[in-house]
Length: 284
Image: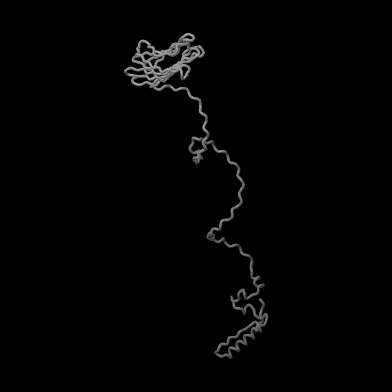
């Protein structure tokens, strides 16, 4: 700071004293400005301690008052957590990771390996009907029925059991004299009704009925077709047929047989056939 000469300061003090004396007991306030002070006349001892402020000195003097930077102070306590900020924008998609190892095999029987059942699919359209298959073989007869199917060459006799009764079929005769006959055996009686015919011609048919008392010990003749039955001429080259119903019965049971007897001599061989279905009733 610049020093102030004492001569100027003495002059100021004298002037102040004179003004106070003239005022008597009254106090006159005197304002001293920079114009009343001679340059470089005020020294540090003329300034009251601790009265100058930083704003009272020049910027250059202020900078001179700065000392070296002191050491950093201790870290202050952590402040309170601030409010959560708004979410940031989604970042770009990362690169595809490496393929993982294959898992263990899973058995379909393990309930933990099965996923939930899917929704049933819609029904498909119906397909077209296929063609009918070939007829199957005749089934076995039931407990109250029997199927009879017999083919005989000429000069052949065959017995057929039907329930508790028996039929004897006899295919016989020399050339042009073929004959196919039917006989029955058993306890009771037999009634036969049918139509005889030659070559299935409507002008060569004849209604035929007959009956017989049966014996369990021998066969009783019942019907025949061919020579003399019904015509007496040569059987070649014709065929003969007798079809109808045969009932065999006694006091406990009965058998109803729907039958067809056939004699074929068109090839002069005289073969025979007997076919029918028997139905049982009563105690069999």
